[in-house]
Length: 327
Image (tube, rainbow, N blue to C red; front, side, top):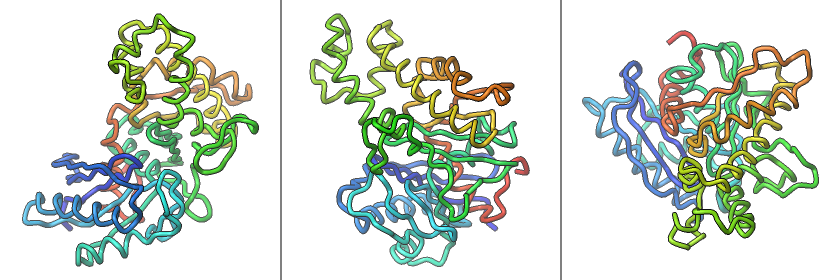
């Protein structure tokens, strides 16, 4: 079997693909806007173009398969995605068949939830290489979750386990795009967090955040908040601490449910590091029952978005036999 595979990270904002070597990791990458609002057929064509580019970059054009990390519920046979929360006009889409047809190939195409492949990438190459069980949370356009239990992805009864982003922390809270009221994604998803910060700015006239976007608050983002926080801006620090408190709350519920004490946090928003994670670590024990508080830890996945690409490709290389701890 060739030692290379193509990994795809299908995000609500950006589409990324990489050629991955089993041992060396990332070899080449490409990215483009997802254009999710144009529907599944258009997005699949864009996926196919990215995959073809990465296949051309492989030695002798040889790859073992294609792995795709996608938001939403993924079927047990890892072929179909249903109702991804940040995509327009998606119901149930068979990404395996659609991609094979567009690439005119019989190469294996393996689809898995995006947070699950991020967890797999972390377990093989990143912060999750040591613990045999951990909870993965990805903070980006949405909030994803994955569970590694005894060195394997825990998928639940139909393949949809781990949707931490749609766990409710306040039944009267704002609605996430999934329609779940008070879900953590309705607080920490990139758009929701940015909107909340924009609304709160009126109470912080001394903040330097508007200057960082030349007064155009439509350009505000978690990245800008992080930049402002590192420059000492009290407003930005408070907003990120607010997000960290919410994160610690939902993670406490996850620990109570699963009895898994290690949490790995990745995704683009996690680049804010301790501005979010320190408050989360501080409040986490308050939301965990006393008997489960020993050895709690929250780790930052420093691979960033590369974790999803690595995990998706590794799943393509290993298939159903993918088991971390035995690279």
